Image (cartoon, rainbow, N blue to C red; front, side):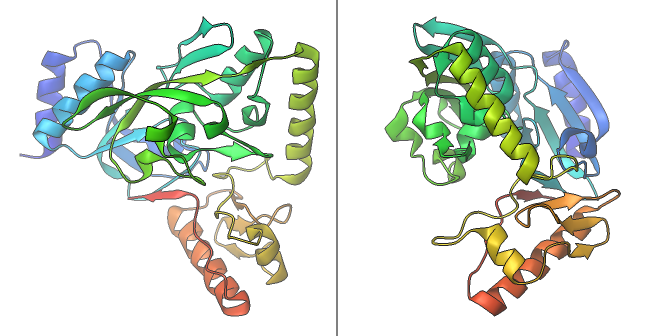
Length: 303
């Protein structure tokens, strides 16, 4: 019996209020606007609902993919024969201390940064323009303009298969460049705590506006993408290497190396996962051949 039949039967009885969608197009849930349908797509509204669903999926060996804002994902054109769990409804934010905020995994970084601004707390300005959710940002230690999540995250509540829910401190989170403990260990972020500092709201707003202006000027925000396509190679900038190799503006189908910033592959309209993958490999091969640098993709390709 296909896993979807067992899923439909069991979730109908155990989670009568859980929102379940069938054959949900993943292009609607990724910033690349690319991806075929997910066989089953669930939206839990509480952390307890998420963990119970993950435990059931583990017991039944159902294939699972957790998705937040989909800002770092490239999904197969064929779609996903797995359960996609979307954390977008887990977005509660609370001020739990004078300089401490606690938020759900589905909270958008821009929303969290704006909340901090209204509370007169500084430290999250760098995150205001990052399009991801808090859970994904913790998992990959997202950062921009000199700031990273590891600078502000002081505790994470997470679920791990076979272990249940645990609270992790900074050392246990093992943050590194675009990685964390979740990079090598399966688990799900439920909530995270950030510790900031008192600041002047006008100064915080000014920094956010300045970073937003710099992003608009330098990054191709007008077209769908998954942000920076490649990790920064040691001693280099990926975009600079790609431009030096004459690949700025290179295309495969609807995918293009952005003429505005060579570090971004963008969807110019109708791009497929296959287009993007082919362009990524073209770029990697050319840069490796001409510079000896092996670019490592920052985006996660899911099929």
